[in-house]
Image (cartoon, rainbow, N blue to C red; front, side, top):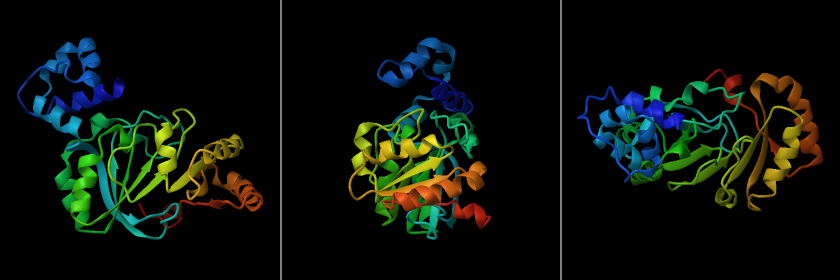
Length: 250
């Protein structure tokens, strides 16, 4: 509810004609009941495009080196989509949570920019699966680009992906259907209980899913020795580090 409200607030400044949302959008209708004045001013055209995934709240896009997981060390173009209600207290990109602070951007523009830099495109957030990723991945694939996603799995999978990095969070677990589709499982280790959580999550993914434990950055000095010991005792797991932070790159 809050996520859609802040997103609508951002759209009020779009300059489009004023219309009223109706019950044909059930995910927005409850918001309209609570805030009829706001909804009466929202552009029907923009909301249709957002609903379809043809516009997305773009926080940032940049070309860099993938620093984590299986593809670490690979040059990649990152597309960071705003909006997330998972609420990890240690999140290092909390400015991505509020979708309303990031402008609705046409996906074709996003895809055209991406194609200028790299064949490997990483869609991250925020939580990108808050939105329909189908049109974006269709546009990227039309340009012969590889599509990767980094997601908590909290929402149903949309889009066509060449690589799915699933990073579950305790306070909003993945939807069941995404587990067997994950290419890599990345568990962020903030405390000792996260090792228990990791084993629970690993039991749900497919047999070919690559398993990673990654220390949360602020407690890395404390957690790295524990992760090393755990991986040595449980060699199906691998260590992932945020190498881009050591390299001081985005």
